[in-house]
Length: 148
Ligand SMILES: Cc1cc2nc3c(=O)[nH]c(=O)nc-3n(C[C@H](O)[C@H](O)[C@H](O)COP(=O)(O)O)c2cc1C
Image 1: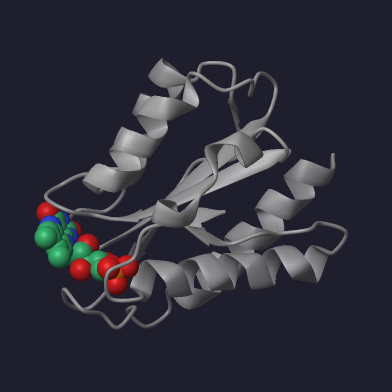
Image 2 (image 1 turned 180 degrees about the vertical axis):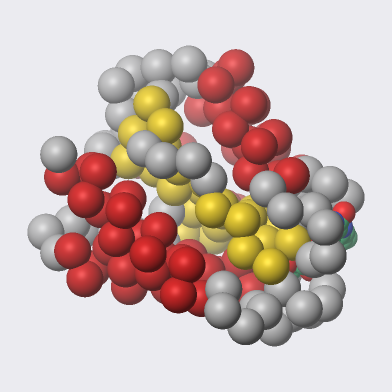
């Protein structure tokens, strides 16, 4: 699981998704900051989850650059899902853009489930009430799908 997080909200979402995945059990997870990811290792995993804060209506530049590179890796048949954090009314905007970009750049990757979009209260957060349980549920769903 990869994420970029300036104020920690997207990272918290990633951690809660992992908690949800662990509840299902039987899956090994690795959480990395996008800047620290070793591209070569991506091909070793069965599934890749990418999380980004919404910056100006889409994913961060770092995430976009990363997705651009996925097309060069042997990822055919592997799984992906995305998640974002946003404020106010930009629900799913970054998620939809990431999904579109992944489909274009790495068409061999198969979507595990539609992306998760989590609302935060302001630029620095915190995550809005009632949102964190959705992250765990998403983790449950993702882990169950990976195991099928
Ligand atoms: C430079 C910048 C631009 C942003 N633009 C948007 C935006 O267009 N729409 C939106 O909903 N949130 C926007 N936000 C709010 C972020 O989505 C919010 O700060 C994010 O959830 C924080 O995640 P992080 O703690 O992981 O960095 C922006 C935040 C920053 C710092």
